[in-house]
Image 1 (cartoon, rainbow, N blue to C red):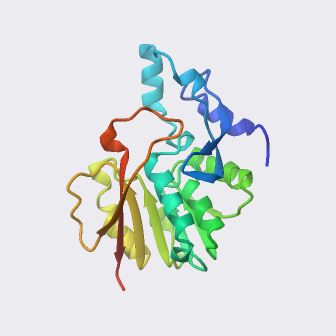
Image 2 (image 1 turned 90 degrees about the vertical axis):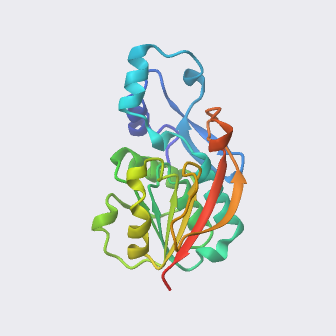
Length: 220
């Protein structure tokens, strides 16, 4: 583990030249710490060029989104969901859910994200929390056996909705956390809970995005 993840800090500067990472605790998962973008340089008015730079490189991995925090908390509170199982955290971002799975006793954890910078973030955050898991860059090329696939906040784009079917092709059980899709109706997925949360660092999001819905599905 390093106190200064230099490579990851260099990545965040693609979003804003004065951005940097800091160790941050999660209010709803106090056992987990993550390297996240420090809020200090984010609390100002951005120029048009800076807005375009953020849009070009949004650095999703540098935030712990509300759905990720909720799903990590849910797993830590219900470790039997992952204990001794082979689990994939799809769209892992910072790796927060993968970390929770490892802490809860999963037999094998795979953090999967198409963004190589996100995988670097997963690697650094695993070291920060003294856990181990595997990294993988492409769900479609993944051919190992899974017991459970978990995904948080990956349905922000309607084009991603077909992933719900692919998840069940890859694993017999799926757990999804989402705050974006309204009127969620995708059998066999069923709602199992709703929890209020927020992004870390807090982006002061609309209240509607702070309500995280949990869904589960099974093909067994």
